[in-house]
Length: 556
Image 1 (cartoon, rainbow, N blue to C red):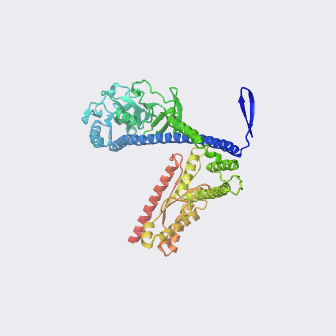
Image 2 (cartoon, rainbow, N blue to C red; image 1 turned 60 degrees about the vertical axis):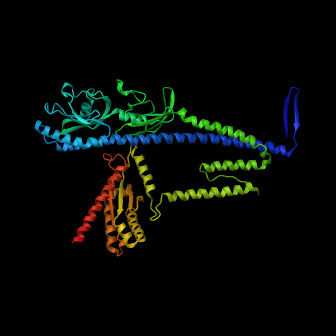
């Protein structure tokens, strides 16, 4: 090997014949390469960790805010729903005498609910002047000393069909349904509020509006507590992208509601967007009242942390390279190549690729390490395969477990969002008397009981996936042939269980299973969860009927 040294006088060639020099040069080069690779991977790792940490922090803050605000809004919705249900059941006429007596009773109900609703500023029941000019309703206001009755707004001075005025009355009247309204200044009190309002009807005639107004500042204070880094904050918008509350924008003073920046109105809950020339990252979650809670932070503040760690790591790498340069003279050139190959194999293994070609037959430490690594990767691949099989199987019955059931349901939900929706039904099963059998005959007999029950379910619903979703609960997803024959199969199941009970003498073989089946109805079900809930409800109805039937039999 020779190196060229450039000088003013020309080029001189100096030949180095020292093996130590060769080893040192190769070793230092190899070490530099390894350190470079490690540093690059380290930079990407730190960046990914920093990004995941920021995502987790944003998500955690958003979830915490969601829970707090949902509790806040749901208490209002529940109070208004309870009162409106009572109102419509209590109304028995629209003449002034009936209306006044009705209002007195509703006032009592409302007063009992005030202590349960956090942040309530006013509550009211306003009668439409078209129904009665004498009976106007009531309006209670809390300005710091408890709720006192206040003179109701004179609606007769307004056009109740104009939704730009008296929005708390005109909007629910126009929409015909319960509605949350964006911030506004409540009449006569000059207080910023948001309100939840429900229209009231009697025999399809609009009677008036029941509602609760909550202090806008309480909601704003809850949102203002959500901060991250130096300039991270939270804000609210409705489902149309209109900003309801923003810590840097006074929405109540604007003539029109501002819109959220482009990119935020998305189904993706993790969003990157640009606002006022600043790139930001945001996480949003839906609230129970239809609004969205957004938590946003500048991307530059997210990156600042991992940038610092990257600089520290780069400096450390340089120092380590210098510190270990003397020791690297002991490294031989022949171990460089297999080590690099071994690193590449490790990278493949890290990516989940267990089948790779790496041959090194040297009878030394690297050779032993290579063979051990190959055995380890093969064993790890087999272990991962076995683990996946075990993760979704029930150990007792060998059926699919709850995790597999959730995956199937998620797949069905994805198909429901497609233009062509599948036909399916869900059947839920619950093994009656399992606790009694366990207590009286032992858990080993209870296991036999569960196996007998699962066997009948699988035999009857032979073309459907069957899952054990709880200790004594099973589920079957009916598709295609079983879906078409669902009623006959359900009847056959009952007959098989009845026949099993009649034929067996041991209690742990007398299979008694409650079942409920629900068919997906696009007009009624918004998700697979709705179908599961209806199936579960029918199962409990079947269980109740079975118990009553058994009780009558015992009495006779």
